[in-house]
Amino acid sequence: MRRLPRVAEFPELRSWQRRALVEYLRRRDQDFLAVATPGAGKTTFALRVAAELLADGTVEAVTVVAPTEHLKTQWAAAAAAVGIHLDAAFRNADVHSAADFHGAVVTYAQVGVAPQVHRRRTLARRTLVILDEIHHAGDSRSWGDGVRVAFEPAVRRLMLTGTPFRSDDNPIPFVRYEKGPDGLARSRADSTYGYADALRDGVVRPVIFLAYSGEARWRTSAGEELAARLGEPMTQDLVAQAWRTALDPAGDWMPQVLRAADARLQVLRSSGMSDAGGLVIASDQQAARAYARLLERITGERAVVALSDDPGSSQRIAEFSASRERWLVAVRMVSEGVDIPRLVVGVYATSASTPLFFAQAIGRFVRARQPGETATVFLPSVPHLLELASEMEAQRDHVLGRRADDGLDDRLLARAQRAEAASGELEKRFEALGATAELDQIIFEGASFGTPVRAGTPEEEEYLGLPGLLTPEQVALLLSKRQAEQQAAERRRARVGVPAQSSPARPPGPRTAGERRLLLRRQLNALVAAYHHRTGLPHGKIHAELRRRCGGPPSAQATIEQLEERIATIQSM
Image (cartoon, rainbow, N blue to C red; front, top):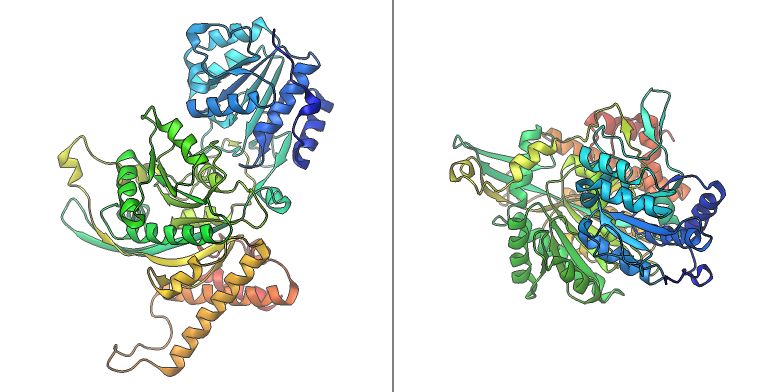
């Protein structure tokens, strides 16, 4: 006989969880969508709802639907800890769960293959269905249709997501859409707890983004050698090829960035987070294994590799989570839902560029454990990624009827990134020749700091050496101070002049559009810092206000004209 969970013994809830629970119990609706940022505690909230409904007899069974096999085990363990026993080994052929379980955990793929099996289970007992990361139900028509058929008879459906937006028009089952003034239908959540809210409450860590640019060189299928600076404005095809060149394990860019990331990890380990771990997110399995070899050469320690087609990967992730090992390398095994709170350093070494994937990936680093922890993510200085990093706190909904403009075509990146192992002739179409790494800028709370410095220099070390236990205000203050010191050093060098024998004299002022943009960005950042000291407003809020008044993207992607307009605006504020 199954024992009912004891609600009175349930762990204390966070304030957002209590508010959402009160709203859920007040409304008693069949469908409820809770949107909460990664790391906020969606699992705990959902299990408390399940405990309440089991205890008062509203439901007799619980079914959890998760995106991956690994998350099934994670859900079952979390549920067992609060007295709810779920069968994570349930297979479609079993038809029904054993009597000593309160229910089962299944995947969206399982439901999509045999929705009638799960419909019969749902009809057999009054059931609460928890749809974890519900946006996955829109991944394919078969998954969405299967979820709708299987769980339409459920007494209650609780939908959870940390990223309630998609870049397609596939409606998500059971999600309510409402038309706005523009005539477009948007998903409507019943409870929302965003990254900005969680940051204010100390539930998640702030993230420092270190964006690396550099010169990339490659050879085309026609034998033409091309070179481009990562992060500079160019066509999507050139961006994709420069990006692929930078991520090439055989080049110089990745070793330099991995070396910098490991240096940052060591700083965090020695400044209050002794078990801090790092994660490299790779585009494919071949690259993941190559990055692991690079890390072993750099650190002298073997990195843990987790690949989706390796049956032992889930166990390795669990062991890594409980260990003090330094580095984990994965493709998509830990892109969503996997809870490894000690991950504080990330390397975004993948070509995936959708807001959905980016948010899921960065969500792996924001789970706070103690006050003052910060996370650091290294990424290529690609305009679209910089924009996503600058808008970490933005709230998004799933919009139907409008093609999302992600700024970069993932198909182009996939074509540029994939390993053409099936055909030697295809492999000859592209040859990476080399890339150098340069720390281009630091993005924190939507603001851009710093001026470009070469990898491996003392200037880079200054940023890598930022203390790990700081409040967001202290982080912004230190970055502003470091930027001011850089600018002062450059002014001193300009006053002294360059010796004639060292290099030819340069005409005063920037010569290229790229140099002009860099100069204007420095000027804008200096004005924002000065305004911050006058008013006490955070840098991110000042940048956001300038964007509101002037329009346009974050300063990292702004045009020369947009930067000039913002400079004129802040000078008049």
